[in-house]
Length: 109
Image 1 (cartoon, rainbow, N blue to C red):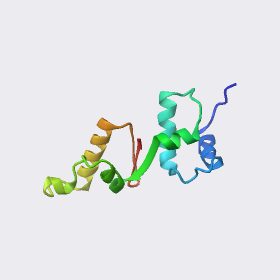
Image 2 (cartoon, one colour):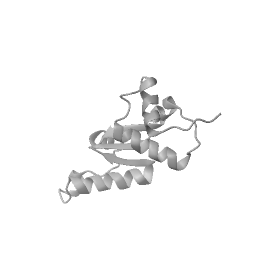
Image 3 (cartoon, one colour):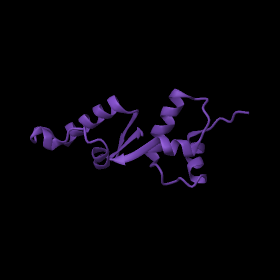
C-alpha cells in the first residue's frame, strides 16, 4: 500500500517523530524538494533523513570543512558574498548540497 504525502504531511512527520527542531522550515522544504526529485516513490524515514542531512551555519560549515577558503586567505580581496560563493562551490563539488537560506547551509552529511 502506498500513501502519497504532501509537504505538510512531511513536516508533520518530523513533529510526530519528536524531530521538530531538527531542521528549519526552509531546510525541510529543500530536503522535500530534493527527495521528490530523486525518488518521488520513496519511503519516508524521518530518522534516516535526520542522520543523512544536516543544517548548519556558515561558521559551522567552515569549521567542518577546513579546506574551504576563507576571506582571510584571500588577503581581504573578497567580501562575504564571494566567500559564500566559494563555500557553495566547494560544497557542490564535495557533497550533495541543497542550498542556503538565512545563513544556514543544507547538505548531505
